[in-house]
Amino acid sequence: MIRLNKYMSEAGVCSRREADRLIEAGKVTVDGMKATVGMQIEEGQKVCLNGKPVEKDKKDKLILLAVNKPRGVVCSEKSQGGDVNIIDFLHYPKRITYVGRLDKDSEGLLLMTNHGDIINKMMRAANGHEKEYEVTVDKEFNDRFLKDMAAGVHLKELDVTTRPCQVERLGKKKFKIILTQGLNRQIRRMCKELGFHVTGIKRVRIMNIHLGHLTTGGYRNVTEAEIQELMYLLEDSSNEPGYPQELNEEDMQDDE
Image 1: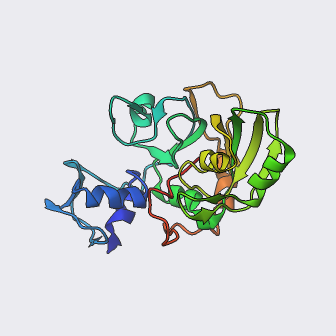
Image 2 (image 1 turned 60 degrees about the vertical axis):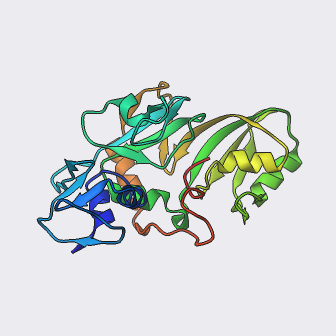
């Protein structure tokens, strides 16, 4: 027996959290019957998403792509309101999904994979893995702003204080920030609380994988050496999707 959301995650369809959403929306069936959140399935049962079979093939080789997401492309499995989603944008020949979201107006490093457990291990906030961003705001800031960002900012909308983080000046209106959590629009909300408006966000690193000089809209295969280091870093990470009870799942959406 295996939980349905884990089965879908290991099949590379989506993360467990996304699987639960799809199940709740009535888009998943098991042996022709609508699935329910939390249900378990046995080997041989037929799982379908939107009428198409979901099959887990243990022989599938790990796919892990580093993508330089352009502004305007949304991290979603489907098209919404005329927006171009990342799946359609890449038009990759095999089924892959994104590791954590980037906001529509943000750009930079996005990882795509067919391995659901990697998604859960990398993005679960409790595992504390680093994500690095370059951020531009609408006006010049002083050192006090950097210290306040680094110390943690109370977000009134979510009624939560962000974790202490690393912040470094890159220019009069530009700074680098390294986060170990993924609250929805976190950087934008932090800056807003301190009186600044974000005009640009670029993610340049997730754990040991760097954006580098990847062309906007382009992608590359993560190297074998990078994968080996990543697997070492993930060795002690939990793949169970757990989040603080006081926050709903939309509030926990990665990333900035």
